[in-house]
Image 1: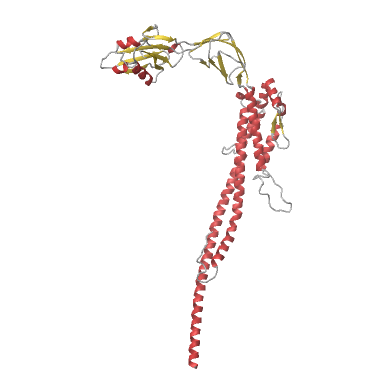
Image 2: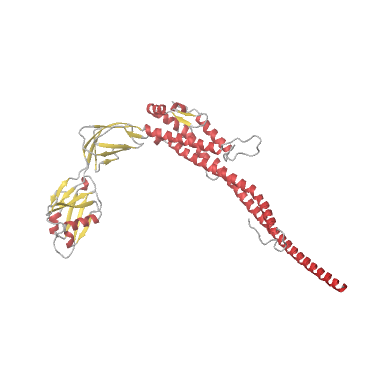
Length: 478
């Protein structure tokens, strides 16, 4: 609130204080508007919390209404020659596996050289081309070597800098024994390497190798080979030890050759199913906490006309009552199948708080004894029946933001935002009115101040004049 300090200077009246008091009185007209703005902002915030809680619940509900959640599997066997992971596409059952051969990458080793820096090729003054070919790569690794690059270190650096499918390492056996080791980055029979040097016969003789004939200057330390595993008597051969296409939804990682047949057992992942249910219950309970918070009512003195400031922003709100009734009604709706109500799964509702409680033993028993029936309770036909399917539909409708089919949350928020926009316009209009009124007061007070100043000056003049006249008369009489 602006203070005008120069009012009353001319008149001597305390016009500045009077002006401030008038402005304070005028601005009380804004209080009603700001109180309403605060109220509706609180409601908008409360709806935002409900929307967030409903969205979390819908995410958990969608998971329960999805078949992949209930088709999840896990490996229940302990295996030594391999490990396995599964997806929902895996088929529950047992399989006999025997790892007969692991996939390996070829390793080639050169002969011994007294130095790793001595030039091994001819001195031609030109370059030569080193090519390493592999059947499993479309483009051979090709590097160009100058005369000085033909040392073991130079060759290794050139191969590694090319960043192809081969790595080169210098192995130092002793101070006078250095060897070049070439290792394929990929496994499988098709990873076998053929090393060819063109433009330098001396270097070709030192490091050349033909994998098709197993001839050349290099020695094969490890042969390139495929993995071979027997699955229920069927031989499966792949170029890697990670096999994800032998059994649907199963990824095998081979680690050793089997000493005997092993059994791979794939079971329903009841722990994953329980986790999905627990996640949903937690989301439901979190929503109940939110609804209780935004509708909290605190009783006040019966003789008081005001409401407690601790009340929730949505006390008595019809939308909240609708949400509660919809959820409560669906919880008590009987579904077709072995499990008709949620209590049969060990999930019951606390009558006081409205929150759900899980009997872990009873839920575990249901998931273990009849997982298909539990799945059926939640999914139903996937369209109109099944608890999760029905709830997902209700939540989708509540949370819809599509134009023309807005859900109750969006509709409520739009309504509140419209009111806030109206209140903002009212506030601006009222502020403008107050500013105009105070400007009028300022003009009037300034005119009054000027008039009073003039009157005061006239009064002083007349007083002085009369005083002078009186003195003159007294002198003449004397």
